[in-house]
Length: 182
Image 1 (spheres, rainbow, N blue to C red):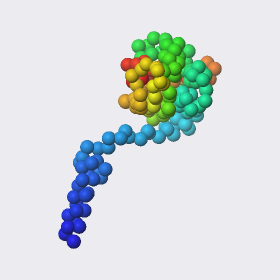
Image 2: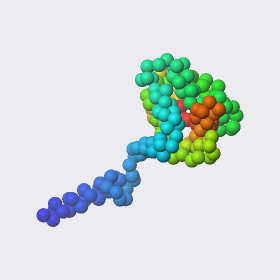
Image 3: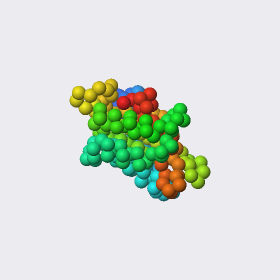
Image 4: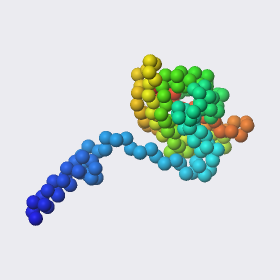
């Protein structure tokens, strides 16, 4: 009986040291699961919530659209006055870089989940946004990325309500190579 108890104790310690049992150890080497969609955003601003769903569905190759049609669908959610991190107008740059990436990579999935939003004023919100991208370099194409990346920390994306009543992204969407690893 003592041997069974000793073996059980060793087993529990081993599991604990591996990070699976809640104590000590090195933790889980697998990335944490994606956060849940901010229910307040879905409730308070359902059109912005729908835009997040549209953004996530626009880029993957599995949606059956051509690269140019996928970029066009994606850009519907981007303001004409979209700014890069330097504050420079960049909607054309975003469009061109996204099209170039779709030419070089198969987008397996693009996760775009609002974690928390903050109302700045009646026409502006900031949304902490979880982003994960899985891409595979196409045969014969150049590029250093092949796999999945999770942006950390989650970027804060600024949404603006335009004169037509539609919310679009104004800034905070990472897209340059020094912001996104592919």
